[in-house]
Length: 461
Image 1 (tube, rainbow, N blue to C red):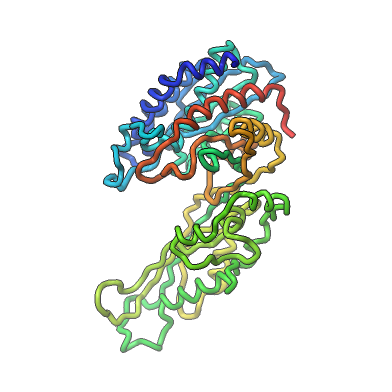
Image 2: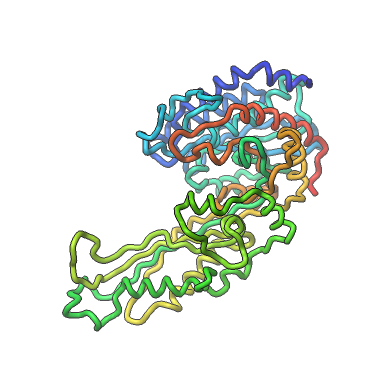
């Protein structure tokens, strides 16, 4: 056994106590009343990095919640610089009554640590710090140069990290990013995350008469805004489930046959999924199965619609306005602002007669992200994960959601990101009774020791 692995084995009780300490901090980035707790979590992470042997550690302000930087840069200019990313903010805890134990009083049950943030992402983020510490403390040095970027805004979409990284790109300059906010396929099988979808949004208001009208006096005389909105929405999708907005698919990167084959090697039980969702059949873009639609194809979804009378009984009115909210999930190489404009143009072109439309867009975007399975960083991670999971190669996976900062790393630092996290999707992320399997907490520490050791002399390819 190597010296650093022996070090890991000797420190397990301390590692668990430290994770509990971090989980106790209610660093909920979405709630203003917890902004001080987010700062407290940042300071805890900074002190833990210093304790681990990192240098130049600082809590950096952003326009919102802070981020933590630290480094160890003594491996030499001929060795790569690796940036490790994670986050210390967490989701809100409601509904509180569904928690078996208080969300910020961590408790171990059945070899699982329960508490908000235990899995997403405090547990996985801490594995990276502890893995670095094990190598550095036991061997006196690291084989590669290491930097850390640990943020406090991931759970609210990293709204300030674009401008922050643009301003701090020299400080965070690196050759490769390792993302501790990734995850395993399940507790006994790893995954290499190759793609995430982006996001843009639109809100539409359709207005007709200047006020609600009596339907007996005015029905049949004018275009009802709710009907007009319904007809407008109907123009956005073909009967087969594909999106009817002109140009919507123009920039979509089609995965190769080999990439799609790798996706479909992952076990999938469509009947079970339909049962879990409470539906009788799937519906969506033809030519793709349920997993491909959720992972690698773009969508246009109606998120909300309202207008007119909605109380009990009957009120015979023609409403003056109707409203709807849309979001688009995007894939490489769709540019969010461009797709948003395509949808806006479609709405204006298909606005029914006799009504007006008002369109709002938040200007908050998430960019899609795609990496090749042949990227040398992914190949190295896959080799290590295969060893750690008893010869089972990690699945090549994608996620329908977004991690916005990965695109910012590519844009501002010119660095690709290998996702290398240790939580599982069934660990109640964002839900009551979140937990983290301790066997993968310890396995993850070893995983970070391995990847930092084997990145010596790594070259991008």
